Image 1 (tube, rainbow, N blue to C red):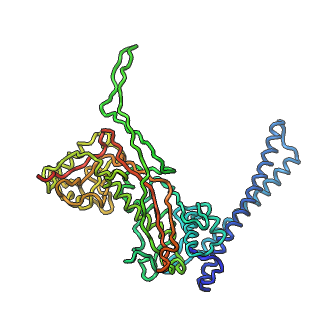
Image 2: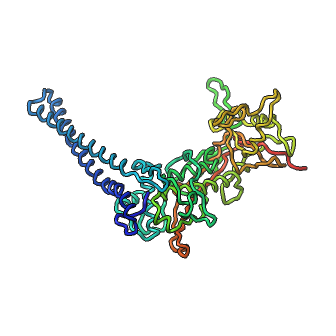
Image 3: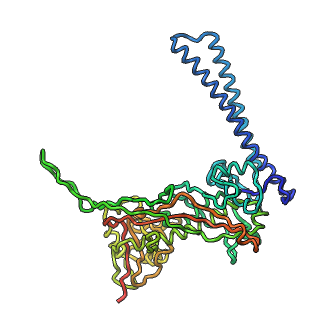
Length: 475
């Protein structure tokens, strides 16, 4: 993504020549689309004529007349010509795009991605964020960018941009590609502090970072709502209910089932301020949209993970650690044995032990202590773990959460086991991005901040799908 309008006076001639093929491609894109659209419409008209001639002869139960046969031949010939023209235009557009790749400051390839691809830098979302950033400098963007940006909700002069979340479960991503300076502002002074960054799309990198830095987003059942209104999710407790035999013509006895509901709300999370230097916005030909998306994904992902793991406030998500009931208490306040983890498994109802989302959640340090334990036959409880394999304990996947208790201290809930997907995590379907143009003008910086709304809760109507291993309390 770049933020320079064509003919920008501050753009060096050498850099302008590097950008010119891409600029030309973007401007030609609209003409190419409209041209192929007209050709496809002509093919559609020819097809209608072709079908009409065939249907008329079939309806009259006769062979084609010489005139009709000649007309069909002419239609087929013209259709082939139109099809070849469309193919040539599409091939030309693809070649122009391939030849217009930019080179970033590290000498690597600048991948524009595919049009409309959320993960590529050529998506409408990226265009919207780019135009939003340009507006913060008071610069005009080209018409093609504004047109693309408007499709993603960008309005020139707006103080905020709403970015829709389009994935129910964010895809696995990679670590952040930059770190913040001590002042918390991105600048161009040092690689790794804002100057050497990798171009990708805003939404794709935002969602990847959400999952990478928020393990609860990986294990929970995540659902995205269109708005933030209160939503009731039903809970059923059918633990002790079962069917029974009845005689012929005998009326079945009514059995009551406990039915409840949890109310999901929308609690607001702030990413905190991200300050970007004027030089980075003005001089660096990078995908700043992707970098901003990744930075905010990391921050919001961490906030979601903390709230949904440890949250215990009445005006926020209820964390999974506090929601799970105790399935097993250790015999010691400072040590664990293998049998206690096996007992925790057996404490969970068999129906939940066979669910697709069943697994363990614990801190990596607890896993480290656990790997040293042996069962009654002298075998390590965790078995052999091959490089790159998913950690497993008694056949169930182990998920690491850095916010789980890390020490074997009295009263700590050191491990969770059960159907982790029973925890429901709700996200409202828009991330709201704000820009502050004047607040940090004295430092020649532009401030960005994002807001998201979430809620989370363990749905437990008395069946206890998730239980914890708790260290024996002191005393």
